[in-house]
Amino acid sequence: MSKTLRLILGDQLNLAHSWFDEVESNVSYLMLEMRQETDYVVHHIQKVVAFFQSMRNFADQLQADGHHVTYFTLDQSGNEQDLGKMIAKLVKNEGFDSFEYQLPDEYRLDQQLKAICEGLELQTRAVGSEHFLTEREYLQDFFKGKKTFLMETFYRQMRKDFDILMEGKEPLDGKWNFDAENRSALKDKRLLRKPKLHPKSVNLLVEMIEKAGVKTIGTIDETAFNWPTSRAESLEVLDYFCENLLIHFGDYQDAMTTWDPFLFHSRLSFAMNSKMLSPLEVVRKVENHWKESQSEISISQVEGFIRQIIGWREYMRGIYWAKMPDFGELNFFGHDRKLPDWFWTGKTKMKCLSHSITQSLEQAYAHHIQRLMVTGNFMLLAGIDPDEIDQWYLGIYIDAIEWVEITNTRGMSQFADGGIVGTKPYVSSANYIKKQGNYCSHCVYDPNKKTGDGACPFNSLYWHFYNRNRHKLEKNPRIGMAYRTLDKLKDKTEILEQAEKYLEDIENL
Image 1 (cartoon, one colour):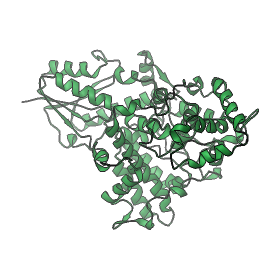
Image 2 (tube, rainbow, N blue to C red; image 1 turned 180 degrees about the vertical axis):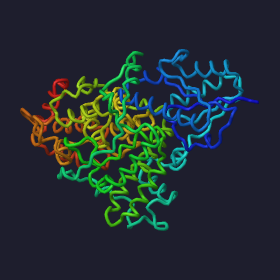
Image 3 (cartoon, rainbow, N blue to C red; image 1 turned 90 degrees about the vertical axis):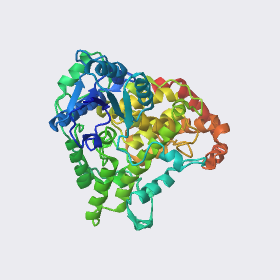
Image 4 (tube, one colour; image 1 turned 135 degrees about the vertical axis):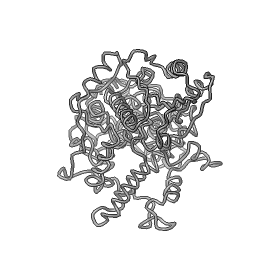
């Protein structure tokens, strides 16, 4: 009887995959904890722990279901710490006749597995991961012949194709997008709900990682690690979100506050990006819960959440496969400034940045507006090298896998792609940050001052960014107003000089 070896990567924990429909005695599944994956970027300790714990839980479930699994822990004897070496070794030692793998979601692994298969003298096959709503090539084909890839156009098509929040061919309530209603600042602390947690001891995993010499960032509570690391736990988090958080999600999804790190966000991104949950089942669950609770939950809460999943998440993945590997080298503004050291410690006097970075180091998490309009906004205004930015975002967040990280950071956040993802740079002065939360009320810098002692750096850096990039941005129809305002500033010279001083002393802001 022929023997087949099937590879399961750490972000392919999909129990619903057709591979597992039947138990096949001639099939063995391979799962690996490898230095290859812990070391290609410096990851948050919680991220490494979450993946390893989830992988082990997944392997245990497969074995309980009767499947044969070969699992190598990071410290196990015989672990070569390299994907190619391990596959070749098992094929030789176990006498496999064929090798199969699910298409990876990272370009580097896609290329590596193609090369591995070329070197194997046996039959090989790649299959889909059966997770996303679209295939890799869908978005590129969808926008074929178009200069711009508008997410809203794609999002509406997804709504139609999967009959989500639709009434026939029209959107429910007559609107496709309730984004204008999703920008409220949280004023009432009493609205907050505690997140659904799954405290578990991971001290042995942390000990193994540290003993192996894996370099990590951030902190972890080894006795009460709280991220979901199994499908069962992930489903509990989804249920909790629907029952307790969805009611205010849309209103406050862009809010920023020192009161709570999670607000009304679902905390499902790691569960989804590791494929313990599928995007469609999450969307269906949320939509059905809303239909059963329409008197309590407005459609704007639900649409805002669903748009993030079948809109942005699916769209970003499509951009990734349409534009890689060149996308990873784009630097539209030619930015080359070093990332300030305090991005690794949170020790800056700017409260919005200090809080967002410290939270990221402690929780391996920040919501999308903290990432886009605080850390990302500052990086873009300051002209930080996109290569350093990618390394930081990819390492620090528990949900960061390159297909979703690089398109959001190098694309949406940094406009390093010159406008593939977004039609204009996402930059703001202190006014936006002040409006969206309470960071400014705790800061030594004054959000209302552009120049002088205590002037908020965001204000002068904002105008410095537009001034130095005038030749690249002035003709953009969406930001013409910024240049008209810049030209009318009576204190323009002082503002630009203030920005220069801050950039020269960036490590001490």
